[in-house]
Length: 241
Length: 234
Image 1: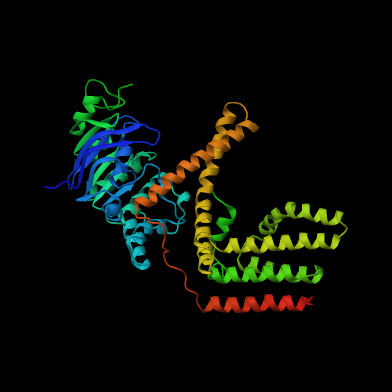
Image 2 (image 1 turned 135 degrees about the vertical axis):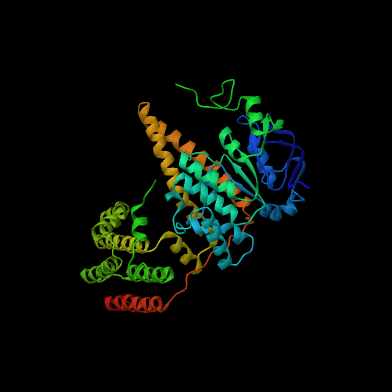
């Protein structure tokens, strides 16, 4: 089976010379969810930004069979949708409906169809009532869901989510997890949350200093790198006080 | 979360709220032109224009006292120039300046109070305002609250450690600028990620109905009639 995402020996250096990615190999197959673990600054977000051409480095990146290069970017950006860590950066239109319709309009849909696609996506994330609201009136959880709707409205085959549970309260996290589970797209989830990864991902990769140093089932990665704030030499759990 | 009073007003319901934004913009423009071209400011124009605006305030179900008060925010600026006029010996001009500036501010405040900003911007654009300018205002409005909240947080954090003095404020402004710049890059990335290629398309634009056309015609009649009644043409 051909992978939906194929990355070979990806290297990227920032303008100031910092080496952000130092030879990354990665595949994503249809229907699977992969968690990206790793310390802050290890290149996880930088890596994700290469998947839709926001950044372009050396090496080979292809999405749904399309090499990620300038001429393919419009198509690539239809295939993979990115949900950013900061929802405020993602919701930049005056109303929720206009924001979610932004993607479909850019795809060339006429206004009525774009509005329809936007409404369906908002229903899908449970935000169908808030079409006319201004984004700054929304709670963190609502913003996160609207941002997700904005991506879903473009009907991508792959979703990449960067720290999706940041600022969400436990019910918000629960709702998001349930929602993500219902979505059929292949997913990449950048997260520090071992429990979230365990709930959603079939496998995980561990980034360190711009390279993937290990890969395997989520609990194996968590155990190998003690990737849990309450780690005792057992399983991730909240310690008895 | 941030709530702007005028924004709350604009989300109310009334006969004026329901009218097409373009009609309201054109009427406001006509009013401003009529007001500024009125040469002499005596009781008649003040009463005429003032009553017209008051009627709009009532028709828009806006809180009259609050609106009249807020329009006064423009007075410190015009008072400066009025003072200069008085010192130059032209007190008639000074009075005209104060009255016209206040009434203009009132008119614009009423427009903003009965038209939500997204619709106002769309109306301006379909009347021919440059798209780029509209986008800039739109983004400014969207992120003004974010930035002001950040500023408040920084002020609180500084107060927790002593005082929020002038140098701290200066540093805060610099940091806010840097953060806004970073944020702008993030927003640009978010736009690119959703297929942005330089041109944004609009969702639907409003359609003017019979009520809007009637409102435009009758409003224009009243304004133009008032202006001619006040005379002063050469």
